[in-house]
Length: 273
Image 1 (cartoon, rainbow, N blue to C red):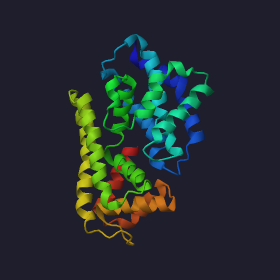
Image 2 (image 1 turned 135 degrees about the vertical axis):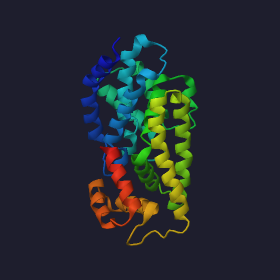
Image 3 (image 1 turned 180 degrees about the vertical axis):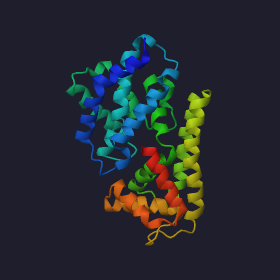
């Protein structure tokens, strides 16, 4: 079976209706970092390594890809209701609505519903059930937590959940390390993909190492954000003021002498594309 054609077939059948469904439900102003662009990137990551996963039943690859594109596009849709750690269960319910709307019997999508509900379980205990879909979705979602875009995604979701800036960096590093370890366990033997995404992981990890050192003496609430903490402070203000990223980019021009802020937002623009 030609995998590229099978992927194209899944996209032709599902991509448009998935995006229309997602946009009809999700309010991006409430949590921009987990909007439609995040889900598009997760699907692209999944396509990047689907051929590297040793599938148990390659005769059912067409159905697996149908489930996978749905999972990639709907796994965080529950954050439209609750950005907390239980959003997986909410996303599962939205997925059930999507299946019903498109006359897809739930009995044929048990792995899909399980994967969506458990994708954010970062001790990866549910992956032991050998749900291939969950394995692929988890790694694809993890990869979007790295790099400059990962710094933004972590910051927005953790600040939205009320985590204090002094604790944020330590919690991010702890969570991201689990994601990276899972990535290494799954793809560490594939040199090209490992080098590509390990570099992105260390961009995130090194950022928060520096952030944790600065946060011990940094005073939030100043008129002129500075350095690594300044980046996070700008995100915090964006959340408070309900601004869009394009408005934040305009503000960056005020801090032309701050090399860290300039470096970060240049990298983030490159990540987003």
